[in-house]
Length: 92
Image 1 (cartoon, rainbow, N blue to C red):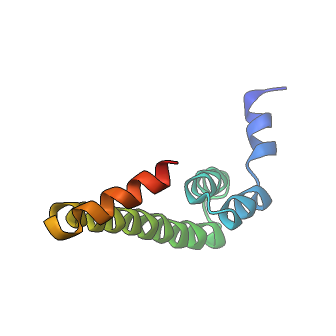
Image 2: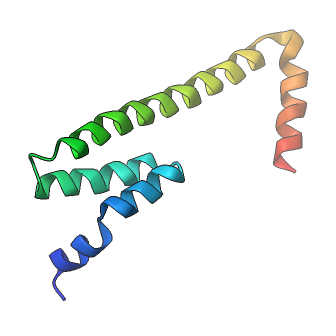
């Protein structure tokens, strides 16, 4: 079997949908990019790529905001002990 044949079996719209349902947006994007490369005029692939790119950015932004929020809490002396205790509990 050629590499291209294996890629075509693994990169299907169904697989992309499964990745998306499970929150693996980057994997879903990768599949849709592959599919669009094979069918450049497919507007549904283009639309899905736009939607997923927005989701990926949004998820990254949420993670950054959460990390910054936690970091600022550590910087505030009154909350420092609470935050450190919370971190200890999460490690256990």
